[in-house]
Length: 181
Length: 281
Image 1: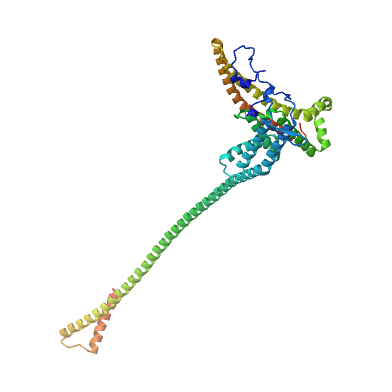
Image 2: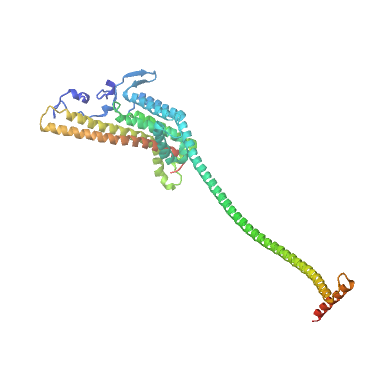
């Protein structure tokens, strides 16, 4: 173990500023060994890895930015769609309202028309009934008058052409008299 | 001269002429060779600094290879730790000095930083306890490599003539200042830069190791003045405790210096390379 301890007083060349040749040789070999191994094997690997790391970080940032952009675009799209839907709904509502109003109006007019028709029909029927009733009444009155007259006169005026003509004349006189009045 | 290492076996008396304070000197940076490999042209002594230097090589290489063998996008464990070191060199040294241009030199700067740092840290690793970079040869080798690299890059990027012209006559200066500036610039770029680069690292680690050793030896020496019972012995114990405490504080301080010197070495390398890429001052 003698070599582990310094050789103080071992004598020989003790000028520390005069390097022995073998140390220069060893130093040169040592440095170039390290330089060779590091520059050929160790450092290219880590350089590549660091570049890849930078790339992946920058890539990640770019990806995140892209995703954010996409998200904001999608949000804008959704907002647009929502606005579209709202305006469409409003349009549909207004259309429905106007349609409803139209329907109501149409129904009303139709109902009025129908009502008018019914009224006219009723009027006509009433008129027809009235004239029929008048005619019947006229016939009844004439028959009644005939009966009365025959009872009064004592002679049957029934089925007699003359009697009928007399009655008719009488009624005509009545009507004309009424018209004069 | 007494050998302080065998102090434990010697019973010393305070003030004893035969047993003075064994102040550590340049000798603590001298190492016996375990064995010597004869390679014909030169022989390689296998000493502790050599073994530690090779150990540093293995540690740095293995740690980096293991950490970045199959790097993951989300780092875990060892990769996480080593990545911090790698990113420190890339962002705080290469890119700080040269901008994106510096990415080409990150492997070189990373190798430099971690090799120098590991060699420095050996100063406080138990059993190792010797900064490899306090052997002048290692800073010299690294400074020479840096010197060749930035001279080569300068000549490659600015042309051989252009590079030396730019060194001697930095553009954008008034003509009158060149007689003063040219010798300084030439001397500074070609000679002073590599020399100071090597000496700064060497001297810092040398001084740090010497300081720690002085206080360690002092703590041990004062503790062993036990033969003399009484007041002086109390002073000895107090001195020992203070020295031990200072050793611990210095060790912490050295940890900081070790990283700082590795950083400065690499940073200056980056600055030199940067000045070779563009002629600017």
